[in-house]
Length: 352
Length: 270
Image (cartoon, rainbow over all chains, first blue to last red; front, side, top):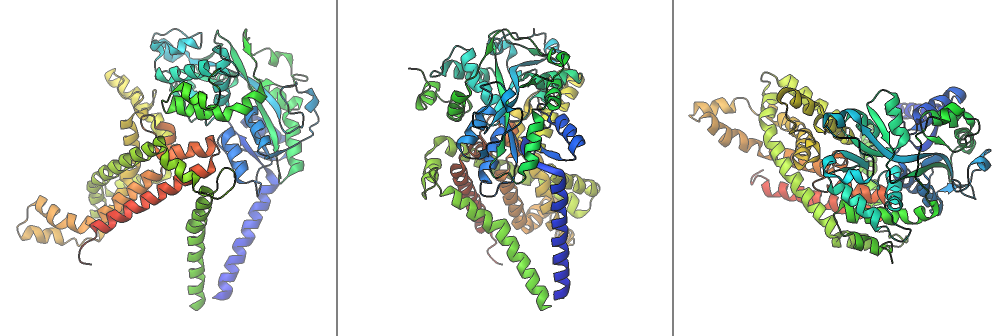
């Protein structure tokens, strides 16, 4: 009997270690590459075809969850690298969760989209715009909205979906940047917060799910999203269009970092280098996200992006320093229906 | 035989430690560690003094208590059919079991696909009646209740069915022979016998609902469901100590309530 259980035990142990060896030979753990965002599905497929190594898709649930997971696993790191909006990358550096990575083409990335100490760098940008489902709007006899202000019009009541800024990096950058589009300043976020609250008061929703598929299905008639997510649905045949709101749009910087204590640093470096290579940057551009290094990307691919007249530039350092506080203020003032002045006053962003 | 007992005891010990004590210790440890890394009850004080957290906890408790009672009452006739092997029992059992496959976030997505703004039900309603009352139902309090009931009822039904199967099938005919009407037999004989398992099913249903966060994360607009609020503290704000304290409070209250209910309804004679 004793021998019997010993045998079973060692067999199980052998199987487990075999399994982990097999897994380690093929995958590269990265937090979090959403398959339906920035065409990570296509990027990972191309990288796997080239190297035989498959970076993990959809392990976590967005930028914030990736950061939370890295922090929890600080003593025993599981992930090699992370993909996130750059404000969260700055936060990760501050929390000591990432390490410098000397990538080959880092000097080709524009200033402002990379950390001087190589803790984070941009891999793409995307304008945060409005997506519309033209079928649903036509069905309701509504014109296509043309401005952010249009969404506050009661005739569009309840039709628009944004994402919850406490959940999505795209939405947290929208929460930050809409303030400057609405006439706010770096120490006065009331115009932005008032807009975000009025958005909810008009029946629109802040969702904790990726909204691009919802726009394609017509579940959301209007979305606030990165332009590429909308354009890729359009390319797949969904009745959707990108609207560049007349007040202007902000650009969402998306980037990567190498995790501190990455279990497989060489493999991680190879993958991180590849993401900013001409091959990957072209795949990113084909998925309608704007490459950070255009050199080597075919001109016809670069010519397909919607033209923008009023572009709002984000100060990443300021955003990173205040986004966590703003998420708290957003939760208090918008989600919980509290007072905007009080919520922003607490964090010193209610103007002078 | 002795080694068998030792092996099984070790397995049980490993299970209890891994599934219960270890998470509990980590959770309690986190809840007692402040943002600065020091020991303290700050997180508990913060949660207990926040009117928002407390209102969310209260509303969630009420919501889950109501849905678990309704779900258990609703499950009784289904369970009777399954337990007695009446026509349709097999199909009911399988559909109740299939329900287990859809958990958390997937369940929420399913409900949006059915009762969202452009859900399947909405399209059918529009095609049949030209109306759109079900549009966006998923995001209302009624929609949330439907969602919870739809995973609480099958689970309650399976628990009840198991007990009904074990009831002596001769009891009801005996009561009828002694002159009881159908409803009298049900209320005076069957239900009292099932009382412990009804309480068990309702408690389980309540625990399940209080711990469920996936559907709430996607659907809850009308009331802030407590587990989804914990999730936001955890991933949205990296506020591990507050989230852990909130979870510990949730666990204590649920454990306390279900134990109290069980003790209160325990039959006087064993």
